[in-house]
Length: 408
Image (cartoon, rainbow, N blue to C red; front, side, top):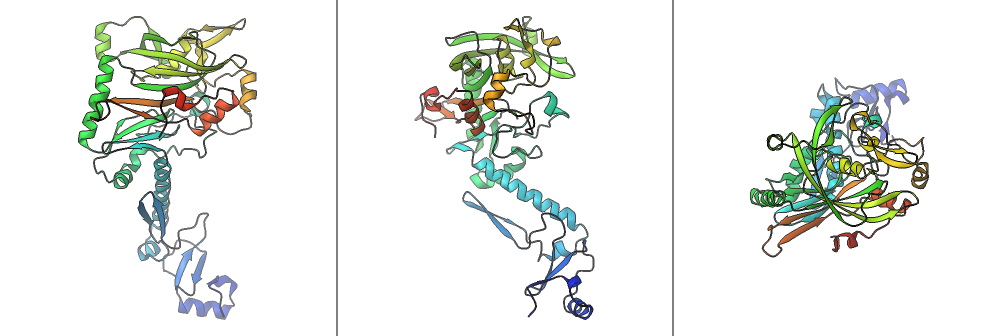
């Protein structure tokens, strides 16, 4: 009895002719390695790594079922001249489906109007591209994350799948977040929910309400011990072939109206500090988070966010005392960490990748979204790599105690 799968090259000359006569291969098959399944009477491509799917596969995501096409038995795939490109497109769709599954695992809140996602660090929202050599001179993808984000995928690409999953054809991204930040990302299910959310955000900005809170691990301890409110003006300049932000005192009304200068307000609270390693867990409440304003603000407090490759060079030391350097002459590149801190984090030079930016949008407050709740607070727990680093630096802090609420 013949086995289920035979390779014609392993048969005798007579048997080979017999097999080809009984089951001729497709005339324009794109590969030389052909295996015939006797029971199902079809030829299956198995030459390259990650060979095409031999049968359809069902992938469960939440309550929905997504099906990948059956390449082995679909004649349009078997006889088409662009088989390889078709197979590549199929695997990209499978990759996107798995990416969507990962995003759905990070949904932290949902009601009739709002969907909130705890966005992982390194995942783009609208497909921002990372500059060349960004791993040497800019922010990098997390080395502590469970799975490295794919820079070719973004949330905007899977919006059709998300609309189908949440059964909301008008699902849109309302309150976005930068690629290298982690934390709360807000979507609206319909136009009414979007209008309510936009009105809430605009109201908070016009009143100067600290409606969003970030948590950061800083190298160095901010100067203030008690919660302190600060405000400053920020502008952008081209420094070392990069558009970087820096504080400024010149803030005319015309410049502010034109958007060339931003007024930033920040409230700083030191939650826990480690004076031996000279690091701290800091809460930063703010109205705006444009232009990397929180990273710049930390440098004015003679500390810098862990994983900040753009602005950490502005804080130097003279005889062991931290000083603020002139932004135009500060180095932009890999963050220099004390040896004690690197030893505590168990960083190895041979380890691939680099450190993520430890700046997490932990809470966003929306007012007048619901009649039953004057303020809807959406909180995003620490990511896994954030928690791991807090433990290594002895900065553990209960997330529930930070905002006096239990995470959902």
